[in-house]
Length: 349
Image 1: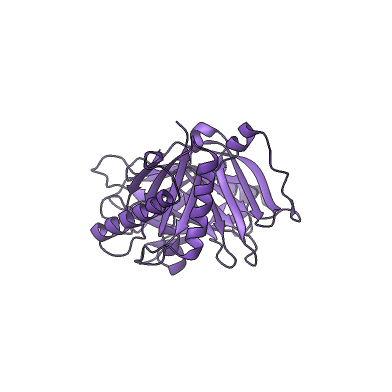
Image 2: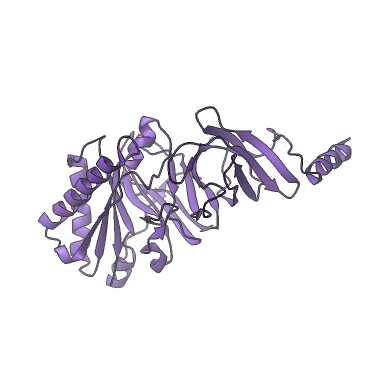
């Protein structure tokens, strides 16, 4: 009986008819939207997975353009189709054996059939299963120093950092992150409590297309290794990015934000060769022109604070992108809050 079932599935796939996903197989929850490159309008889509057994229909978006699917861990690629738009097909890879508990969010940019093909950026899509009763230091970065300080180009043509270095305060863990500036190659995920206990320290390889990573403690927390004392090793340990967040439509620096920027200033004073690229962002709510101005205020305010802490103007580069480089495409308040940010990208001459 099992052989007949497998044969039937094989023949259906052979003749191009999609089969429905088997909910009993290992899979992960993926939700998100597909949107038009030029108008940002959410699009109706159908979603398919490709694997060694053929093509499987995973589902379709609702009337608002949002979708939630089960993506099999056996999938090798995923396709998004929409009437009058170019089909987007991307390879997929899975890191750290993600579980059904994980919650992944994706945003796919699509272009019309009569337009130039949209350049699809490689994405690292992260689901964080971390304790929310403690502050945690959070780093996901390329281990290649050159890649860590190289900005990638998003589908919209904006420069975006390849990773993240920040601190999540108690009760404010961001559960789902998307790195559109991710670059294929070796990465490191290091998460520890502020009192020095390591929750996860995992090396992994980021592949072309969409790479899904669930960040979760796999064992009881352990002490952070002693910090290196050799000057060169200390410099090598410098993060590639730091991120601070803002309230909706605001650009004031909160005490928490100032504390984070004080840490950035200390880092740059201790490493005089370090340069910082400060980029402001907003969520996608409201007029694009106003969002661009708000992101400018945020970036300049952060840079001004660092200058007041003794960082020379020549070491700071300021940029702003409004709501055009979202890390989370959803409309919930939690998702919009992830986009109201300033990213500080570190580099050396």
